[in-house]
Length: 125
Image (cartoon, rainbow, N blue to C red; front, side):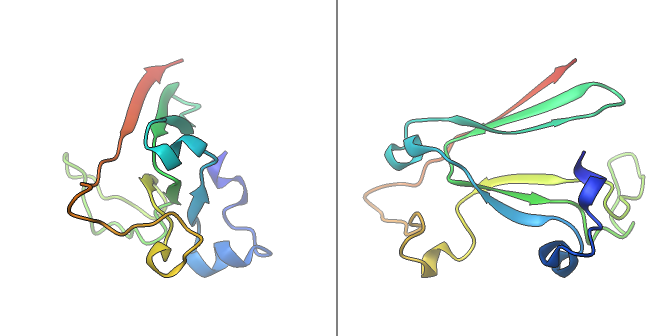
């Protein structure tokens, strides 16, 4: 359950970000070779049974729990998007990669165009 520990007063990172805004390292050796998609995340609604599964070839995934949503943004049908009423999973490289030599490189070169694969699969259980 995403919300079970989101207000943990003893967790410095959760307090600092006001919730989840964390980058997770994906254990995917295939990333180094650019040829392997790995299952990296799954979200499921206990109410509707709708399930989202994410596969990617990226080395990280950022999880954001809507910490700064305040009702000022609206859905397509005009409903206000409230605090922590949504979440986001972004496949990506690690924050600060450009300054860390031990992180996967984010340097782009004209002779090697950037390419990335991410697949979002929806199902109902």
